[in-house]
Image 1: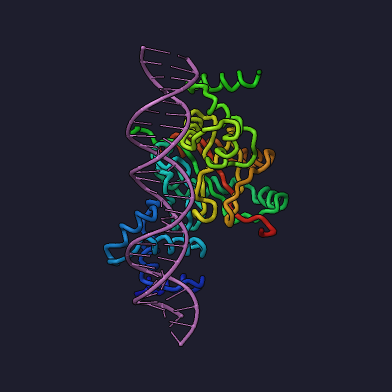
Image 2: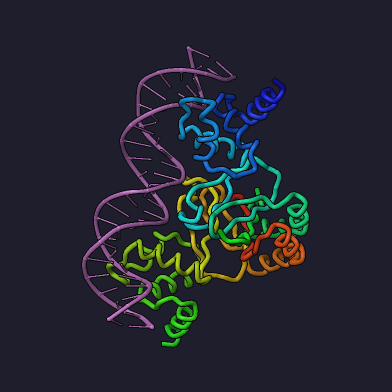
Length: 152
Length: 152
DNA sequence: GTACGTGCAAAATGTTTGCATCATT
DNA sequence: AATGATGCAAACATTTTGCACGTAC
């Protein structure tokens, strides 16, 4: 299969071993828009890989994040309100998130809005900031915290 | 004392009872620039309030956040790397944070940079987004993830 | 006096670790 | 063959909860 090869080369390019578990977890993460938690992914993937361990999901997600193939979303909100577990996203292109302050649900801001907003941030100011603070910026994370209408 | 009254009225304005614990925790949070965790605050405050319970710190922080007197910072990074516990900030005026992807340490972006960057975000685009997504934005959280030079 | 906050300990999560085994390189 | 990943269970850390008591309104 074509896709398998693509993923395989993505992995090996970054020094990750290509295992069935990693492949399945990455595919599931890539296929969903839902910003799943590690546990969500475990439940999505384990039907196909009987015997999968939750610890492997955690290990894999850490490896993917380190390799730049996934992002761990900064999680606000108390544990009660959805802030209790980390959420992941395989979309590496920079985009914004909406986070509901009641439920912790995370949604993507549509691409056109995301780029419109991100373009407004001046790279020269960021570079000036990097220089002044002695800090190398890897990622600009923007989260719009608020509430969806029609309270549940 | 003047300050006590100020805090008292801050609290009562928002329907919070004014207890010694809440006062001490709020003062400690307001006085520091260090974005402490609940446990940090517990250790800062408990010398003055013997018998203070960590659960009270958590309760108080939740009450302060709900009342808009404090913010829980979105916490990226794995549990190992400082993402394991929530950090709080009494500065309600919107500002940006730097987060070290190695250590989880959070630092404020200086006010002049913060406002320069925040001003670049067009309110009209945000309003359009709110309308399209059916979402009421309460807060724009921006985090610059990266690393400080001179690794520790 | 009533409603709410506090302290304590126990429970509930979420995440990591140690180790034996297994798969990928 | 060697290195690193997996699975399992136990350890760990963080946060929440239940309940008796105390305190602010």
